[in-house]
Length: 530
Image 1 (cartoon, rainbow, N blue to C red):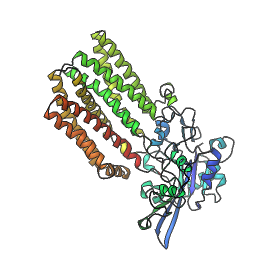
Image 2: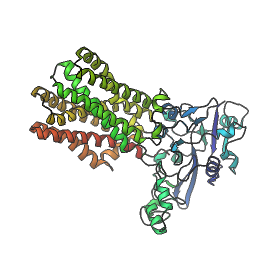
Image 3: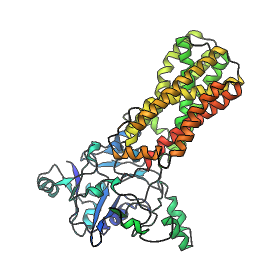
Image 4: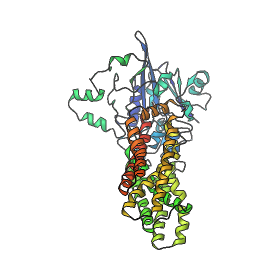
């Protein structure tokens, strides 16, 4: 069996009965939707038309949300339905980043992920999904696509249909008859703050806090002004109606799903792994000899920042009490699980190194150093592979992202030692090693960013993200915070010389890594997926 949907746009009248029935069937809270109807207006008066598109989970055959879920909260049933178990969900929001169709949300009541599950509870007792039953024009057709006698199978055999984002390779099982490219492509129209029927249009985030805030207000005029972002109108300014197709109704924006916590944990694990790797590289190549006290302090620094990494990871979860599920109920295809185990093993090896060093077990230290190095590298770059599993975000699919994170790890390690050198004595050879390495690594870092931002990219989403970084809303943060303060100025300070300048350089380097990572994390999330 293989269940799917056909949406017949020739019949859809945009009544939203499907949305209402879905909310009623599954008790879906205000501000989030399992199914919704997007409305697009095209043309200029009097030659105008309106397109309705019913959107929901595409019940993908190769579902990226299932692959990325670290705890098997999402799974594919034998009949092809992509279902979920909210008793296992940890609220990491990885599935929301992986879904190219923006179909998942965090339920503000349970704080776990949810989506259209094809009304599996009804299917199991022989009923059709609630949206199918309630549709007054029979614009939504459901059924077993593998059964040649089913209505959906016969429709797919004779009608020309389209799907959303076929290039993602997910093999979606939601098909559109008379699908309009302007509606199917999320970037063909801009999300607008003004809609015909819209409320909560400024977005409710994954906690629905915006909706709660609005309902607590009594000043209707202030509410309307906050909703529109300017003078309270239903249609926006005149230019809204002049330039091409426009959205007049859509689902609320979910906001930035991975915020400062994710950027912070990327930084802290970069410092943790970078401090160890810089000392290890110096040791194996004989570049410099690290003082035993500074070496011990370096290991302690790695352990402390690794602990901070775990703290930020847990804080970012909407179900933080379930954080142990990543290790105890792992889904091994997820890089969140692989990274979790890498961090755990790396932390154990660092602790062993600390004890062995204090006990002067030199042979054990030498062996453990070599075992620890691969895990330090894995800790520094695994997030790049996790981001690559987030198929909804094209910018994160860059093959250079792992190199980008590895360089940031080494730079962060150098920065940490620059600061530590002030409090603990180090020899001139060690300082020369750090400064020489910094010159080389910043050169590579700038070159990698140049490649990432200038090579020809295959998708419009990536191009829009790069424009935001280089010329759009992030341009000041990128050019001043990342390039100038985070790369060029530290080089100038190190070249000038002086212990105090070394400390300032280290602080600027760490700040620059954080700014860069925050841009790389946040900017792709501003591209609409539906």
